[in-house]
Length: 270
View 1: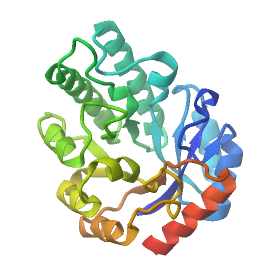
View 2 (view 1 turned 120 degrees about the horizontal axis):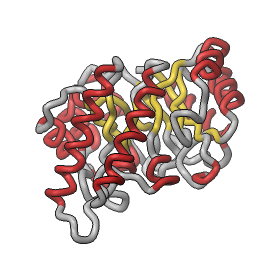
View 3 (view 1 turned 180 degrees about the horizontal axis):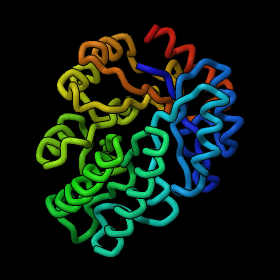
View 4 (view 1 turned 30 degrees about the vertical axis):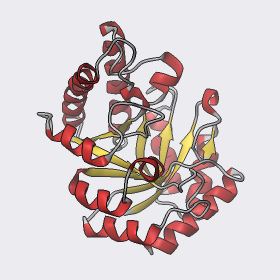
């Protein structure tokens, strides 16, 4: 497992759960100085950061890119994979495909969270899941062609009415033809939806491809009541060896949140 911290470069979402904001170079330099292994990026589009610039920053800091988020497609453009309008769904797939290509250029997976959308008015849950499956089939196969996985994130009930628990995510992914989509285990969302975080991790097993490291209140680990030792043991039990990324509020400020995160990572993961 390796440590990772989030950097958001989208001014429109400054109330969101990302530790560092706006300045990519500064965020990466600070992350490297604290001893993080990687950064997870949230950008406005696939063109928002030049790959050559990003690769130079990676070389300068020694950091890898843990993942790239796609949520700006919804936040800025209103795109989801389950929109009733087929043209919007096509645009959503295109946006995510571009983000997959951006991530693949630095060997990083793309994450589908908010862009999964909802079963809205006049749309059945079954129909929305069918549209979601169609999108993930296409995008999972495209990611595979680019040499990376695609990460799908179950969200809590207040953010989506599609898939909220890891077990339901596993069942859904098992129904797909593509085997290149993995689940994101977000400890904040899981705290709301799962009866037992360690048990749900063990049951999901190898389907987990990314972890979001945030406390019960979405502050950095140590700012809430999440019981980490059993969660860490569960991740070790399933042989998880991927990114543990702090998608948390920058509380009380970004630098303090970053220090608390790396201290917590070292405390629990050693």
